[in-house]
View 1 (tube, rainbow, N blue to C red):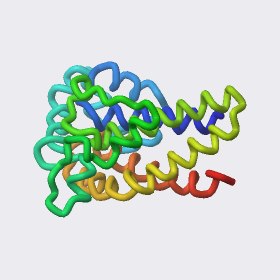
View 2: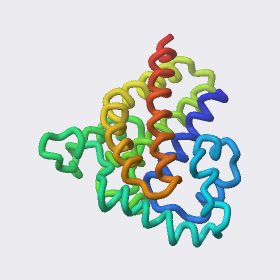
View 3: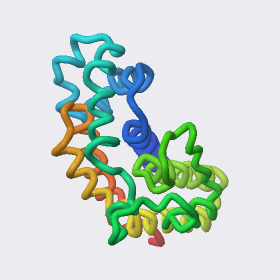
View 4: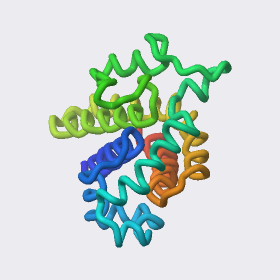
Amino acid sequence: MEQTQARSNIYALLSRVLMQEADTELIDIINNDDAILEMMPNYKIWEARMTLQSSELIEKHLNPDFTNVSLLHLIPYETFYTREDQMIETGGANPVTDIYSAYDFMVDFEAARVVSADHIGVELEFMHHLCEAQIKAMNDNDGEAVDELMEVERTFLEKHLVRWAPMYLLNMKHESRTPLYYDAADMTLEFLLSDYQYLSETAGA
């Protein structure tokens, strides 16, 4: 249970960091959590983090970098990487639409400010959604549902995030201009691969 909650929390954090610009609430959460800072070693020792107010850090450094790695120079959508024509599929033919519907996951496009359901932040949020459902099944002592959800998590990583996100995240590390987004890319890449390995070893075991 504790491990699943930790996995859920990490997916939620990474989804938030990669989906929208930073705000003071997000930065305060990161700055006040030693465990998160340990996973973001370059951000932890970044002089600007320790000397600027959160609002100034965001305005001068973080939001311009988010725009850089999410809107201007890189495209954080699965179909851009998996379609031969590199077009983003914004309609019902998007590869994640059916599985989202099957597990009662709705994308609030207006709130998320994404153009398609296969944005990396939304896919990470879906993994958080599955982890939360797994925790509920654990609390209900529903072993069958737990096994099913872990297999869904493993399959979703295999068919979606692990298949394309490393390419985006490696590019994000290269393009990032701040330690936050460099570390976020590195942390996401390492976590996705380690979680996929964990699920591959334990799902159905």
